[in-house]
Image 1 (cartoon, rainbow, N blue to C red):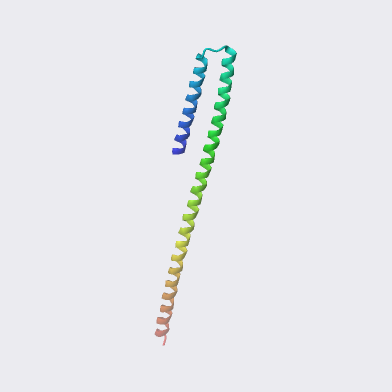
Image 2: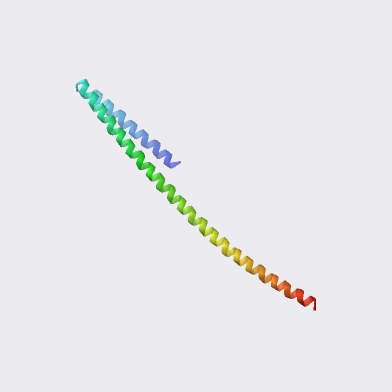
Length: 110
């Protein structure tokens, strides 16, 4: 959710910057062709900047997702290890109880 808010904020800032630059260029005292060239360059620069930021955001999201996956895998392994240890302990206790019952049963049959 926070990543989405950051993306929306980034998009709003870039859009505002592009609009502000376009308005500034339109009000500058240049010839029409020069103004169009400035607008075209600014659009290209802004497009390139947006592409870089989107790529960076994608890389960061991928990194975060991989880190979360690794953390989950580690916790899962720890849980399985703990459960396995407990299961071995329970089995050992049950085997001991079975031996005790066999011994008592053998005494009753004498």
